[in-house]
Image 1 (tube, rainbow, N blue to C red):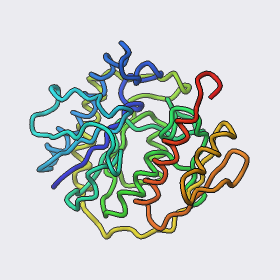
Image 2 (image 1 turned 120 degrees about the vertical axis):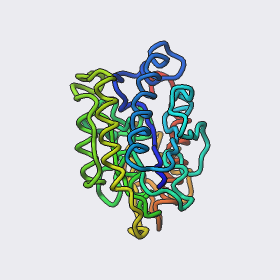
Image 3 (image 1 turned 135 degrees about the horizontal axis):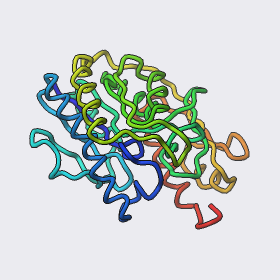
Length: 277
């Protein structure tokens, strides 16, 4: 049995504001240890539950945040950027039985600690076939096309609620409770590690591959906080303006949809100017 862990950082234990997750800051350096603790707890829990192999895919910012030397020596870690499927890279090879979303968060325009979707700002909402989509929802649609179930989600309490919409059978662990976008009631790492480890052990039983989902076509709509970003985004072939601050495109499958999404967000972020956005 092989488990893939997609590891994001905004939903990690103790993380509450931008400096906690921005590479190079003293707070990020401190929070790397907390982030690694969450991920390692999930990995050891899956191994205790019967998994033979755990691959951790770094999914935050530079994708070089976790401390390899603090991980259980039975796991492997995929680190670095520019991966075909980004946050869920590795799921496409046909050997993954279940995936865990560790350190996840809610989507742009919703309540949640450091809520966003791919871009820290600029995007105010993403919808897939009319349903508001977090990164968890987007990635769940992608992995479903490979027959891989989401078995565990960790983050703040709002993230756990969000997960029930796209992975109703998955185990969830809230490591903190939302107060505002930059404030939370946090549990200590010893407690969250124990909770995550036990949830992962139980979630191993859910790691059973199923028939690949064929849910397309997918219409993706993206709303920005400034009109000029629509112009940048619509440079991507197939992406069209559908409102003053909105673009939309349609893909037959989520593999192409998420790759187009990456292209749109990359172009839009390059058009953001300091201060004015």
